[in-house]
Length: 265
Image (spheres, rainbow, N blue to C red):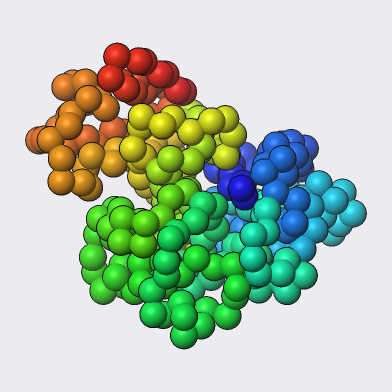
């Protein structure tokens, strides 16, 4: 299964070694291709890059070319690919992808794909197709949180993704039954496909506004489903019947899974 990960910094630029370390971890989930998106402090896309080679090989062989632009950026979003179909040597099959001002990378799968995919609106064999109608609905003014959850349900999909909207300068993260861990601090936000999925947690959706100021907004899956199950979060996390958790870089989230307790920073 592919890996996704990233680093978003508030007040300092990236260090090549920390990027290489994250890429090394993500490479355990895929060595067929490597791609990344580099961001300025205010969220401008500085570079969209991908090659059909393992992440550590790309970074090591091209360090003199890549390191300067990495170390002049404040954010990086990555993908390491384990190809299932769609030859990696054809670079358009590799992540990240782009539709208009949206950039995204994902792992996981969906059971079937919509008409837009069969008509090859996006020319890649590896793209799972649900992002085409998903982005169309977002452009039509629908709530991105609702659209994402409905799309994953409609196409029987599972997985995780990052999606970056350059126009709004917002990063969106989503996971459902796939590993994706993160840490939120005042000066940095980091995430990676590391660890094992929590099979009892249905999933979550995170929004991050750039420039990053140490805050994220997180919404659990129960916000988007027709369900009255409230066991994911205790009552003091709930506002007006919905869960909207804002982390300021100092707080610890507690997730309740039917008697089991898991904490993440």
